[in-house]
Image 1 (cartoon, rainbow, N blue to C red):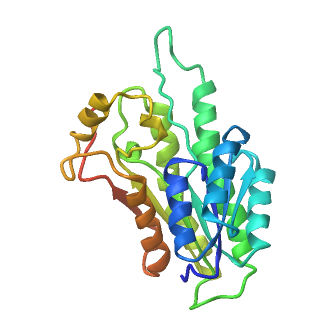
Image 2 (cartoon, rainbow, N blue to C red):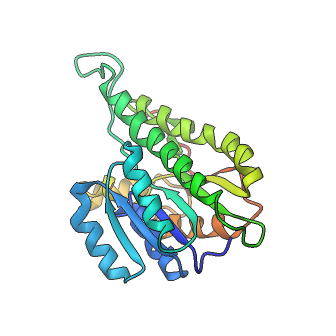
Image 3 (cartoon, one colour):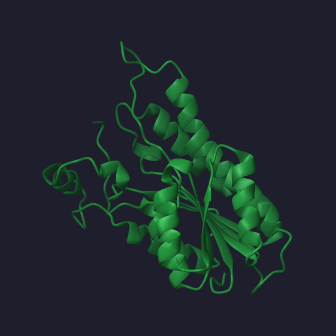
Length: 254
């Protein structure tokens, strides 16, 4: 899929993996619409201004299908929508039992944001892509974001792991369904990445966490996630696959 001349929607685009992806896609010639929460509007508007006239920030919630639809419509109004990247997500932890046990609220929220938000973008973007003219025998690519927690969730990550396992699980059936529309679906399962989730940790703790990665022995950089997104978009044989980007780490129970 050609990136230049296309439009893209990136959820969670105001920071972290989403912001790095927006920068990468803009540099490759795409017009990018950033969708992120109203609370992230200042960061989103600043990034959009930094990236230039082809980048737009839309305030919204990925759990709201109308908000996702507004972002998709905004991108489609600029150039043919051929790229969608679901990078929005949350990762709180909570035990199954005990005085701090989640009574379902955390689980429901995690599924709504991580899995439901991915599904909403996939559905709304694919519907728009299906109406466009093919380019090089393709209409579009949807890149989802799972996590290595989908496969090796740690203690306290039951809700998070379930939500990300759901993202991994929808990848192949979605790719099979959308194949007749010439739309690919692929998923990245990142390992330990230097995102806002680690922002509150001290340098010593961040170094200690990164040292758990076999090679390279550090936290992943958002730019490396974005480079994977670019490759997935431009390589037409990548479809229906979940690719770990994790430095060979396999998470321990704790």
